[in-house]
Amino acid sequence: MEIFRCLFFSIFILGCIHIIESKEDIHNADEGTELFVKFINNKIALDLPDPLVIESFSQRFNDVILTGTFSGSDLNLTGLSTIVFNLTKIDGIFPVKVNATLTVENLNLYLDYSTDLMVGQLLPFYGTGNISANINKIDISLYAEFNIPDLTHPKNIDVSFSVGDNTYLVIEGILRNQDISDSINEMIHTFISRFVDFVNINQDLIERVLSSIIQSIVDGL
Image (cartoon, rainbow, N blue to C red; front, top):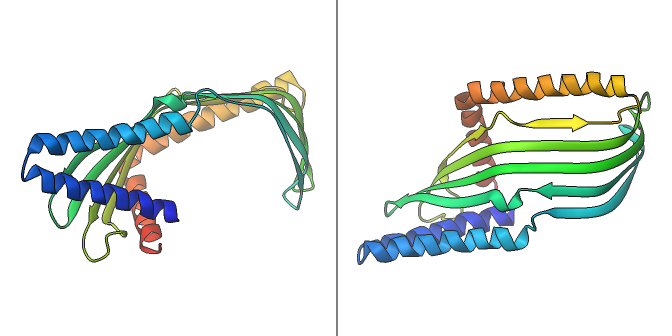
């Protein structure tokens, strides 16, 4: 939870600098905002390698839900460099009002896998093949107001987002049977398409619920 405090407090401090400097020189204030945005995006570029490659890993499960092993190799995640942070607007004195956006243009995942699992100690799930996935164009916007005396707990948080249509998940080699894999992948494709449509159609309602949840989490930090 401390990372949320640090993030909100950093944005608030930047907002204060922006307001102070804007009373003297609006050009300097804009430059300060640009430098901060560049710093965040440079941190993203440096801390998130693109592509992210993991040669192999293995996980053994032994509980009521899952029993067995899952092994993966040649995991390749590309598109992390498309993550872009931006501060679209900072204004006000107290409360300081901040609008920030995070955009992910395209994330692609590929993974070879081998699994021999028992789900719920009843349903066998085994297979050997590959998993490929794409998350297309996600835009996340955050609005928050910072006020004294509690600067680390922003109020009136509002989150909005959108998801691109070209989002998919394909799992080959399910139960080592091509017909079964094709049938399951068709269901997955239908589910994801309907889920994305549902999210975008009911965006306002989901955003209100999500904003309330995030506000409650922040209030509890």
